[in-house]
Length: 255
Image (tube, rainbow, N blue to C red; front, side, top):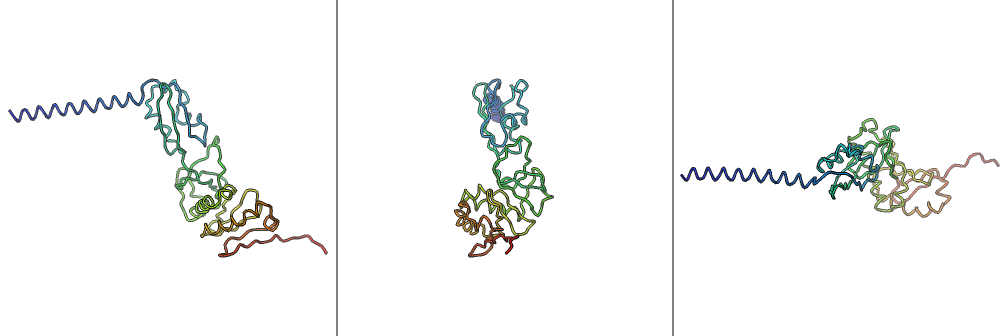
C-alpha cells in the first residue's frame, strides 16, 4: 500500500511539474508578445539608419510579421554584423528596439577596399549606405591579403596601430581626432598623417605614450601654423629625448 501510495504521489508530482512548465512557457510567450506589432521604433543606431536595419531583419513590412514574437525580432537584429546587443520592449502595439553597435576603432584598407575594424579586431564590411564615422584609416598591413569580412586580423602591425589610437585618446583627444591615416608600411616604421598638416610624422614602433606626449608638446605650434613645422618634410618621434624636424629643402634658388 505504501509502495502504491509513493508511486501515485510521484506521478502526481510529475504531472504538476509538467503543468507548471507548460504554464510558464505559455505565460512567457504571452508576455513576450501580448498583441500585434504595428510599429517598430529603433534607437541607438549610428552607422546605418533605422530602415536599413529593418530591411536586414526583414521587418520593413510588418503586414507579414505583425504576429512575430519579440524574441524572434531581437534575434533577427542580433544577426547584423554591426550589432553587439539588442534590447527590446513592447509598449502596446509598438516595439521599441535599442541597438548597441560594436565599437569601431578604425577603417582598415585591404589594398583599396575599406573595412571597419572593431575593438576586438573583427573585420566588418562597409555597406553602400553606411554612415562613415571620422575614424583613423589603417593601411599597408603585413597581412593585407588575409583581410576577410567577418574574420579577425590581430597581427603585430594592427596591435601597434591600436596602441597609437588608444594613446592619442588618453593623452589628447584633439590629436586623436586629427589622425587621418596610420601607415604601417608593411612592418616598417609607422608614419602618421594628420588632418590639416601636410608634414608626415615618423612615429616608429613602441613607446606610444611617450611619443604622443612629445607630439602633444608640439601641438600648439602645429595648430598656430609654426612655419618650422608646417614647412618641414617630416617630424621624427623615434628618438628618446628629442624630436627631430627635417626642414624641407628649398630648390630652384639662384644667386
